[in-house]
Image (cartoon, rainbow over the protein chains, first blue to last red):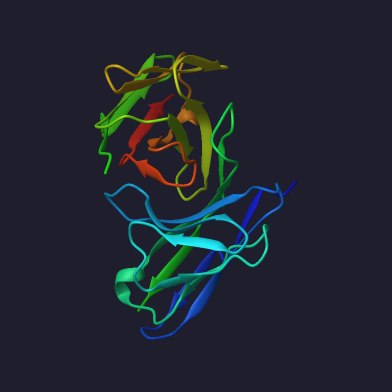
Length: 114
Length: 110
């Protein structure tokens, strides 16, 4: 199993450009989430999905869009990049809470908006 | 919203020392996670706890639900333990909506 795979690992965007961060998992997990990590702050939830076709907003959703057409994939789209979106982005997947279930993170995507 | 506070923010230890990192949260939870992040690296789940204590190798995690407090202990610390340790909590029984602490940066010197 590859676990959670995120691409790209590094990206530089110009203000106003759009892009998609890809996230794929091969563990058949129902739950997938996107977080951003900024210096001096804990990770914050952007969007999440509890299954194919179902998405919802997290704590900081503005400027981002998601879709979940398959169980495996959960892409994050930046509609019109802004410098405030410079951050490290993590995708995560997990099974419904219960027992010893845990959460798996991707390796992160470093995004700089200039 | 659940507030998650970790202490200390930074911790420097000598190899072999016993390490304790603390996590407190403000409202009831269904589970608490301890995560590890190496510099420039991804995030790895160490433990998920809903009660009591768990042990894996030199790592021990405990939780006191009544006191809304958890600790992560590292016995016989080693320079490879140097990383950021992050506490995160589930509220409402969901594994997809976590609230994270800001992390504790641990440096273990040889």
